[in-house]
Image (cartoon, rainbow, N blue to C red):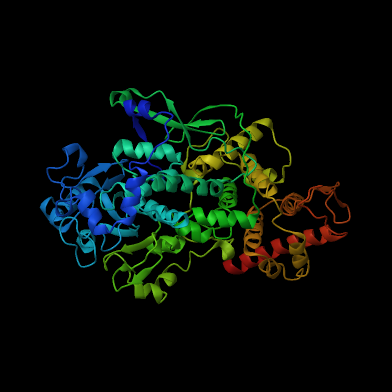
Length: 625
């Protein structure tokens, strides 16, 4: 997958932008009309509002101008280059206008149906056997994936289920362009696209509604649907925070920048996003920086709380492998190993498959009934049903998955608890290798310089300024992880790593954790396995990083261990002169969250981690023999 479809290109029409500036989007229906649509029977709704058998959405021929039919024969509009909003197709239209062939010509690989089976049965032609206006198999037989997110008409889904749906939608977009429909392709379709733009592009919800309406007039119809997108954006806000001590005041604010000659000729304005004083264009390039005068808004978290939040945001192999390890720690550790030319502790495949997506987005698959070659919806009163249908030749059957065949196939892509420190896991790494990039002056860092950076406690103003910029961008610019992949300065990566661990509201290793470790001095890896999974995996990953950085002298290695222990325990400790347990002293950080180590604990903790490093190396030697 060469093309990056993690974000959509957003281009505003000049005149439309002027007309909506500063305006909050309103509902398309008044309160009385909304109540009517929710209370009167569906068959009467079809007759009153849709036209019944002559429904303009089901029989659009002659009822819409050509510019409202980007797919000929369907009331349809491209909202972005990759996302098409459309009215529901039917079997007659599919055949008459060769709609599937049009999909192939336009690069549409997936169709997402936001209807529930049996709805709008009085509109247009009779429904097919499965309760939709067409047979999903028609698309699947022609290599178009079919998904079904079942929402009640004029309704919304639960926020957590919507998050799972947009994650599945992001997977579908990684395969190619996507066509989305409900009945008219306005309400529920607009809500799903709006939530996706909030998720993938970090758009302000009001801006997302205006933008979708600029491409698909009349979209997002009710006040409840607008509120749904707004609440979804609020739900995501704390989940996105990587550094809780940085400002999040400007998340989702878009500003206009001067368009290129080509863009001006097309009548477009390009909007840029401002976040924490960082102004970035739609390609993720920083244009300028501003002072943030706002009061910082923070979302403090512990390691376990962060992992829960992270679990909501990740999907696919990334979600599986980083179940118990913060993504920021994974990226920084792997980056340091690449700079030292020491390979990877573990790699994450960049290409997901549907079964892995299903595993990491379970809320999107509620109320699914198994069938031999597809997953079909069970009747439900709640919005938020989701099913995925795929032809038998494209995917294993549901029974195969239940019998564990799929789990066996992916058994080498488990979470990082058991990642090897010798060869890692086979497959491409999550991020692009620095060896594939243009080297900055000075070239890659050596093992010695990476090890020295890990032991640093003071940084130059240049490093601190760069670290501050990264922290701000990690909170509110989606593509910052891609920038970290290209960072050549190990001091920057180390400072980011230690600062993240240090700013947690409670230490990774609490006093009770240290007591567990000290009770397993003879079997340190067994002691680590007794910890909570997040603490165990994070601590083990750091140890594996240090174990990989060879050759370095013992004193430097001990110094790095000392630095690591200090950060993981939130204890300010001082070393005097040569490394020895007797000369180790400590000063305690006086905060409400920290508890002083008891007398004599520090030398034991240091001995434990030295023993753990030795055991890791012994395991590595045994595996290579």
